[in-house]
Image 1: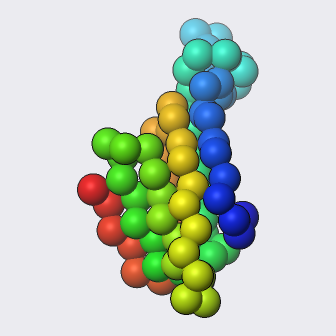
Image 2: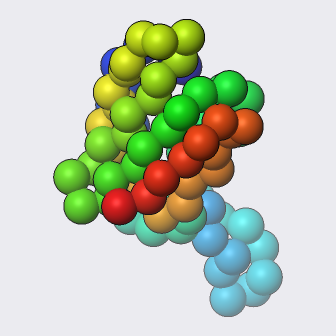
Length: 79
């Protein structure tokens, strides 16, 4: 979203031993999806921050417990 947001991906979906999808509080794959943004995005996994520059305005998101990122059509850097 536009703005400064915080995301905590503590829980997630897994495939259990029986082959069925199951929600668990402490696992699974957590994804931050920025694919709809036309923005310059910088993801810093060490500090848990995502800086988005949209229309010349800078926004900072924070995150924890996220394993995957999908970025938009702008320039993206990962550190």
